[in-house]
Image (cartoon, rainbow, N blue to C red; front, top):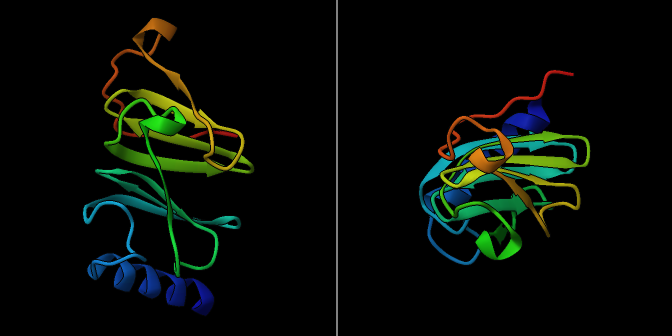
Amino acid sequence: MKKYLIVILILLLVVSFSGCMAPASQTVNRKVMASAGIYAATTGGLSISTDGGAHFANYTTVNGLGNNMVNNVYVSGSKIYASTYGGLSVSTDGGAHFTNYTTANGIGNNDVWGVYINK
């Protein structure tokens, strides 16, 4: 528990200061900690840290996200689910590539605000 609290505090400090270590956007909509890292849904893409928050890699529409405005993120094993203003984006390779699902795939609206997987 203490380890998670320290990671949360580090993430808050990183997000609070601008610079090379901060996520791509200063607006973080949601953050998730998983065994593989820290995931921050931001207004500039999905930022992922695999080193406890010291550095972030940012993933955007270039990587297949439906939109750079990421509202929420959920991580289940090796899969990353990102809800965006352009649909639900799913990655099976740590965020390097996303497959995007939209109204064309049966989602009710392309503005996806949340995601949760019930196992």
